[in-house]
Image (cartoon, rainbow, N blue to C red; front, side, top):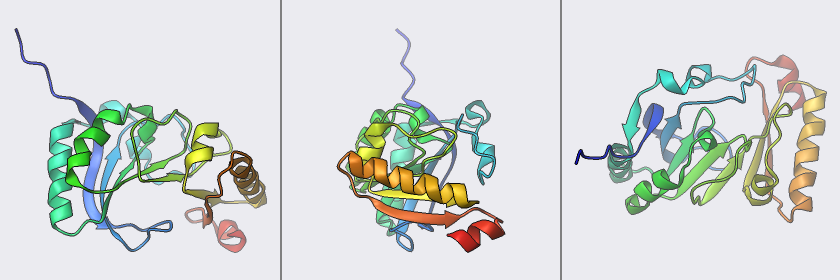
Amino acid sequence: MPAQASPALPVVETFHSLQGEGLHAGRSAFFIRLAGCTVACPWCDTKASWPAAAHPQRPLADLAAEARAAAAAGAAFAVITGGEPLHHDLEPLCRSLAPTGLPLHLETSGVDRLSGTFHWITLSPKPHRPPTPELLAGCHELKLVVHEPADLAFAEAMAAAAAAAGNRPALLLQPGWESPAGRQLA
């Protein structure tokens, strides 16, 4: 009987750095950037992550080994990001990372159902592909990109939807990359 391949996911990159955004900015983190995204935001700064097939399948055991090494080097938590990480079933990855002892953070647009167990969820909803009610109800921070006044109205609507679901996440407005109007509004 042939040996089964170990579980794997398409990975753009892994790296140990400081978290640069959100309420955890400035803290040491280990990042796993998964490939694949159909949300296709025009302003995306990681468009290279969109085609999942363009990136290598990495065994979950290798990702866990890298996370352990990052934890030993001072990483305070692990961030699963993308692309759109929830295009994948994240439960096996979360199980693989659990023995590292690192709290798991998720950065998602929220277009897919939640899979995996996370200590912190950053939801970055997009007007052209709104998030699931489940993620609005369970996120810890709402991070919205601002390019124009309509984005502020969308941010208010997302905060109101989260509140209606019994959640009051932190609301963070972030100007769009190279967006002078966004810098003035946010």
